[in-house]
Length: 510
Ligand code: NAD
Image (cartoon, rainbow, N blue to C red; front, side):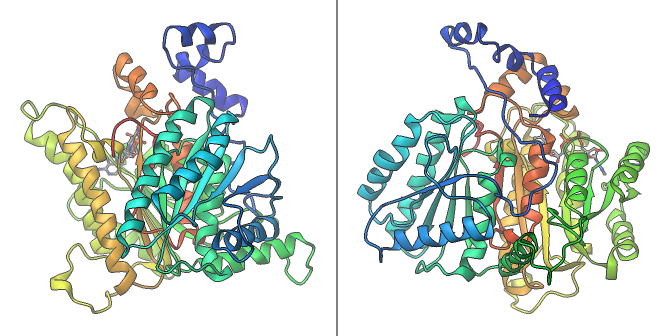
């Protein structure tokens, strides 16, 4: 971790600082207290190209006959990692990035075998800052396959809890397809989710499952693009890459981020700009100075607007029509949110309604003004009208793990945040059949993140909030920004309608 980030982490969380002390650590353990390790988030502010260049990734799976499915999978993974993603694939003792092939699992005893051989040996190695990603497949129409997939997801969560003490994350990429056939084309949809979960930047994501639809979206373009960069990196003079484009995944994209004068929104705006995007930033008039300063810093354009105000969606639409090339966005990030916590019996109508207006109604109204429906109009199959998003557009909504689990004193907030997850799931289905091609919508559910919103919490609440996850510490706005950038890339075309938890595997939620 760079010194500045480490300084901030220790300033925010004194217990985290204490637990790095080699004399104190054993004592903390003796009293049954957690001893979190400071997470290794890497030092970059944008994804490298190729994403896993210079990394060693071990690929392990069932070693059987050459023609087996597992062997074929590993062969493709190996090719992709070594030729396209540029990593060497070696099963070294000190290699802490491990890809586990579980696509061969067909029965409960196969899962036992996977756990007792591949996964147990990994658990015994006590990887520090490790990244373990399990690749599995799932046939929705097959009952046993669905059952094993849910079971495996829970096994992953349990293992993530066991390994979190060393800063290691365990996640799963599930390929939803029937029957499962891997080709270099379909593999394009899996490559980027796998790579992201193997990177430093996913340090605060653990115990999660990302489901990938093969052939959905247009991740094929991502592969072609990656190939062209790799070609350029290999001194292929016919493909020259401008220095500015090097290592940037969102060059030429226009992204609108709401509520981005501070906290998570500011980190998202900064990250998207670092990936090469042009940012249109929105926040309340009271935050105008901060917003303008940030937009100047990242070369973006500021727009002051209270999103809860009547007519806000029309003004935002006019702003996009005037500012975005051809009046269309590539990424729309609904980040603005508020809390007004109080038990329901004491909560005023104003407190409840304010949260509903900002966190949910504003999102629905803006999306409708941008051409995205809130109703399926009796299930009509006709194409949607004009949408203010380009093909391959990305919509990301900021939900919350409290939305998933429910939280004391947050009936209003939980309602709105869970509604966003449900909305993403439902709208994804509509977009996949009736929208401009390749648009995805996903939600991110942050856990305890160190921002002004959580700094206002009482000291004990903050202490418990930080320790209530497998990594025993709070996340940073940069963790959410990295996940947002991941979802905004072309390579995540196969991921839609999902809620990605970025919470260190918090105890709350399901
Ligand atoms: P924050 O309070 O620091 O920032 C929220 C931003 O939204 C502010 O810039 C604020 O001015 C803006 N905003 C609020 N009302 C607005 C309105 N009516 N119109 C336009 N802008 C408005 O919050 P944060 O911690 O950075 O959270 C960002 C998002 O992440 C929120 O949606 C929040 O619910 C969600 N979230 C945060 C956490 C956390 O631990 N911090 C956890 C889960 C979810």
